Amino acid sequence: MKKIILALFAVALSFSSCEKDDICDANTPTTPRLVINFFDFTNPSVKKSVSNLKVVGDGMTSGVLINGSETTSSNTISLPLRTVGTTTTFSLTLNSGNANVDLVDEDIIKFDYSTQELFVSRACGYKTIFTLDPVNPFTHTDPIAENRKWIKSIVVKKNNITSENEIHIEIYF
Image (tube, rainbow, N blue to C red; front, side):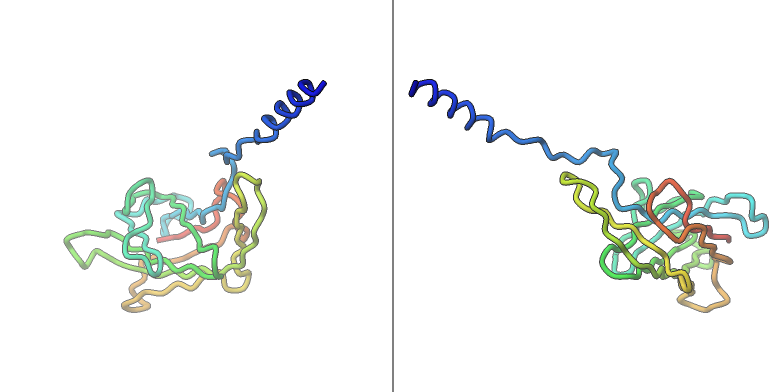
């Protein structure tokens, strides 16, 4: 009888050390990035690619990687917002790296928002969702002069940033 109890105890002890693997599935939605589409200012229904766009976050020394590169010539980008705090500032430079400095143009956009943390799972932890300020969602400036802005208009399409499957901002240039 003692041997049976001892065997059952050993089996129970071996199973007690087993636990479920806590691995976050790569397809699990995490903190979304701000999705921006670019359009032609003179023909607003036409998407337009930005030539050699470099995006640098405030306090960063290198550009935000977009599709693995610091510059892009795309009509859509996704930018990470800071999860700590309520503002994120980006420098958007058109024609970055161009030898003709007269063609290089930088605009600054500061996004204002509130954050909310949502529990995803034990394996994935929390994700942050953002809500752009309904009154003043962004501030758009040019570091040299107000009349030198390459971005002509910015339109907020969705104030709630809960996924990357939708467009949040449209920029016309």
